[in-house]
Length: 492
Ligand code: G3I
Image: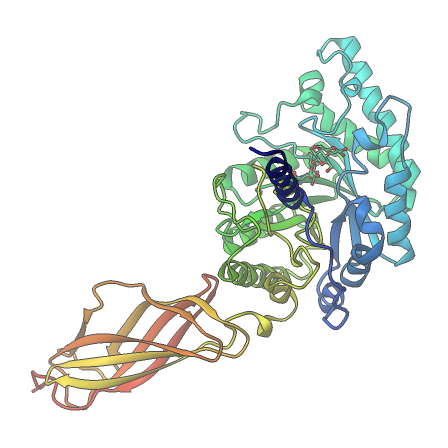
């Protein structure tokens, strides 16, 4: 290759790599003419966001203070950040978040005093790692000293602490993750942490145990077992944090509800919070897919409707959950870009340019979701003496396309009691039947062929059609159809 051609190729490659590695296009102006998330939900519960140091200035700070009335430091209050070497404290980055929050009258959750898995924990915390009596005394002292220093530093600026993070492991007989603290102290490391937090934090500070996938029956069972054991032994625990790192297909809303209601019925009076909500656009367990920078609008709409269902649930749980915290603000800064693989994620209410996504509208105003206002109608036409065609028409509202719309199933039964009258669907052969992507204010229709047997000429039928759009927008359309003419085999 000639020297100049090589230089141009090199420059092109450098430009392409710089683009690929760029954290994202510069944020556009913050939208100040849209509703504040926390103000919209003020009648239900406070809404917080996990923050990084980059959220404390510029447009991110503006987003944070406009939409949220609480913060959690993503990493800055973890052991390795606060006390990276024993007795050497680095409170600065966490303090800066706390000061910003308090100057805006936002509440601060502390996360986390003891990380059960040993993540983001310096190795000195575990002593020599053994369960010798001498090392047990060292590790108990380490936990107590770290917790004392941290909770006393923040005092009443922090209203709730995740005292122990991610302690559950349903694959273990005792339901506990056998991490480095457990290796030394067994289950008593949890007691030591909660007792120290109660001893040193100001009275009234809420002490939480915090874990993920609490909707899964085995993890939920472990939560109940471990929390029940702590309470039975008088260990001072005030609340359960459900992280809720969700995915577009998982968990179901009823499964989330079951987790909260089950904990509530077992432990009335125990506080509960959603502590780390985000919604991956990839299915749970899918480590291959990557939309890159071109995510289909249909996926964002689906995520928006899922956010709506999720927040509908949270609103129904008013009084049963005391806060909801999102694990970030906008898609330009999410841990999911690096987990479970490096790829481009879209789990939060705002996009990479800090603009509102359908996920945001799903939280604050469902009427702005694409496909909102989808309506159905149906009419029957006689084809032969004993056959009819029912045309179901979907008419979309003006909020945006209704993606992947479909009729999931239908029901057709005579309104009056006609024992011999029956209607059988001869086409389509199976349901669901697709209506496709219906444009904004557009329509789409499907035809259903029906064969009648033993019906009066003027039998009226109750017709129902269960439908969905963007997966999570669902409904059942009902009407009464006049099915005119002979039905082939007149009822005597
Ligand atoms: O700060 C360093 C930076 O200097 C370095 O260049 C870079 C290279 O990888 O790493 C940076 O540290 C990363 C840190 O996040 C800050 O971005 C760590 O590698 C990375 O491991 C760390 O990940 C955090 C993760 O916890 C670690 O456990 C995520 O940001 C944080 O969102 C995540 O949060 C956890 C909650 O604490 C508990 N629940 C689950 C949740 C998600 O995993």
